[in-house]
Image 1 (cartoon, rainbow over the protein chains, first blue to last red):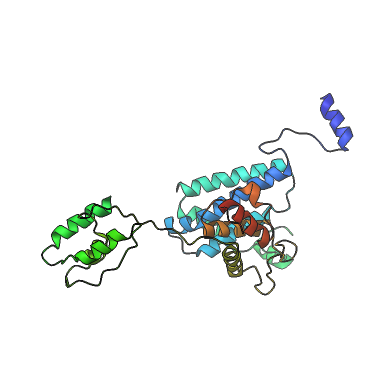
Image 2: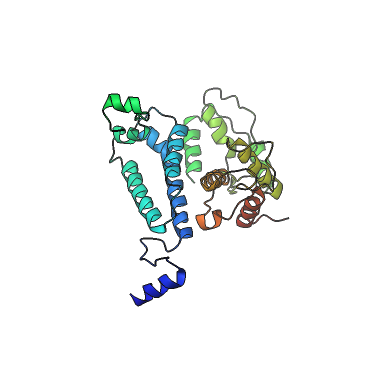
Length: 128
Length: 156
């Protein structure tokens, strides 16, 4: 308690918290890169095992898109949590615990895009 | 070992039609590390197997000749050519702007995940794993060439 208070005052409102997996940002980034490598190498196997109707390139672009969504995160604990979730997804995909529909859910094929302007939202019944 | 057994089996199959030329055998016995000599196609018209399997008959002489396969030796020039070739094939890189010293992030405008993809392409090209701790430091083609030369013991 006293040590964290001291660290807090010393670092100027930077809290010292217990890390999940990695101690600093570099280690977290290294984990992200390892996960990206694993996914990159897994995509062709996924496309052939699940008999998906996408090309390998589309699959890899989708992986890149999912990684880019969390590009802005800087907290190592959040990054670790996201890496753990990504690893779980990877494990489920490798062992074919998922099915084709679960993998294709990433591609949002049959979903309608959400309305943004007022009138479309009004017609659909959303609050403005 | 298995190849020789296979040869003998095949030879016993095709024996009536296969004519062994003892001339070739003497030639091969003379040359110590024997280079495989493609015999001219013998009159055995039926089995092509015997032609290419029977080319390294050795049993009657008793001299062992082993043939190993390997890639041509790497030089710094060939490594550099291959690295630049792979980089030119990558679609996010403009081939005109690519130099040996061009930095991936500063000059070519790639990001860290692109750099990971490039290193993976290098792993596939040269056939050995590059661990991530060292891969994150390789930021120019020059550094990649140096790293591969270090790992593969290539020096001028």
